[in-house]
Image: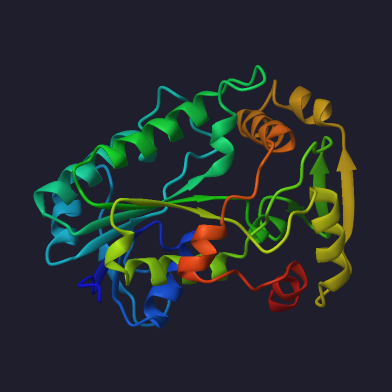
Length: 288
């Protein structure tokens, strides 16, 4: 039986952090969230602790009395490599405080697609930083539980959607094992209940492999609230727009990696231990 009871979540209000936060509460953990504002919207039962990942004093205070730390960190499309980054300088503060607090566990989400870095001529500083962030957690001296995840259904109602359109760019070479945030959240909650999850890396993938065009079409067909359409454009158009906009350049590079990444199924051991994901894209669409 796990001794982890009190968990601090960083990034708990985001698109992927929120499902994890809800799942931890549902599993009976005592959950707090590090937030920039006391007015941040959090699931019922979650304690808001105001602080900043770059501020060691507030992180130290938030970790007092905690058993574990869950991280959902991200590099923003507007950020530069030379900026102060949550996944670099912020992570260093978090891991330093976690070591000092003698936490029993640090858990974190990281994308499978970052393995595209250095492959097939692909090079991007964002993926290099994500690889360094993962290595920093592995080397932190704090017992870790890492989740290397495929892409999420949530992108269909987030970054891929503009108005009534689901936008695609370029042509994917390989399908991806799309995953629901709620299924992923349950995996995290189950893993943290197991002492055997310490110093372990899990692969988190969804129930079936689909191309972006396939999953977009199925989402649109099942979405009940209003009519949607799938809108496709050449990746080159997005890349040209990226000459004038840093966020567009970020999105174009990310989509290029996702279109080219040969994701292989590697989640069977995760499913055997933590349970297989059950939510289809149709169920996700209707739940929105």
